[in-house]
Length: 440
Image (cartoon, rainbow, N blue to C red; front, side, top):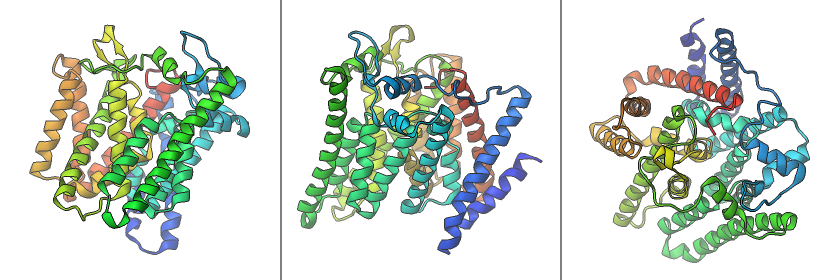
């Protein structure tokens, strides 16, 4: 059986997204999810038999990198060690939930997967994502972080719940989702500016008081999340506001960016953080475009889900860029982990859907894309050596395939190729994670 025979049924199921019968549509995601992970499982077994991957997920090899810090919080609470790395750099909700559920590493990974799929289904409902785009989102290489014992699964679900409430103006779901997100990850520096951006660009005189009240409520929830975390950490360690000091032990202090941008550890993964940086830069460009359009037509309302998602992705890029460690041996600012802060979130799914919905394969679009690719490539030193140039060229070609999806004549072939390529990347990265590789 060839890959084409495997993916054709998926493509046909995705075509049913045009059917308007609610009962039929509601059943498709479960079938789609099942077939997607069946293909993922089969390909992983094939790679294992051929020697490309050789690691089966277990309770021991799933405990890599940050998972050790979550386990330490789960079992022993917070501890502060002056001048050393410690678990105060991590937020409490995920490890405490893990303690309550009393699951193994494998069990928690499955629980995270369920949370991620639930969040993705919420996104599909509120943003009307067609199922082909949904499959591309599911196959995003870094999405595997949502099915390992990291906080990404819970963060994905909570932010999806937040976006659902934002879309349908349901304050209770918005506040609940935001509260969970702010207790799960230190995301307030990115979420708060995105909240303000939504209010400012959609402000209307007739609803000004109501908009300010809603925004104030969201800001109160965000700040309350920060304070609750600080209270929990003070209660267990006797120290206030040690989060930023502990973050500095990982080199995360304010620095002006130093060229050329790099990443931590294995440079084979620099293309991942480079792609995430490109998404952040594209979000910045999109926000500038939306601001200009708003100034020309002040009565026009911008979709809040799109605006918030772009704001989050833009601010994530800036936070990692200006608070990233500068490694002397790598000669530049490290933006490590930007890939999972971008790709393993519902905001990237919204970005992908917006990209597919509004970007067309046209001459002007290609010129803008090539210009942005050149700028990002320069920041990463793509033109300083053969290896760097090859990474840049392959990453640029990869993004160009997404742009090419706007070409209606070969849409199916490109979609199939991208989907399979993404799955291969996702499995490779997952296997690297299980073996303690440099993707973090």
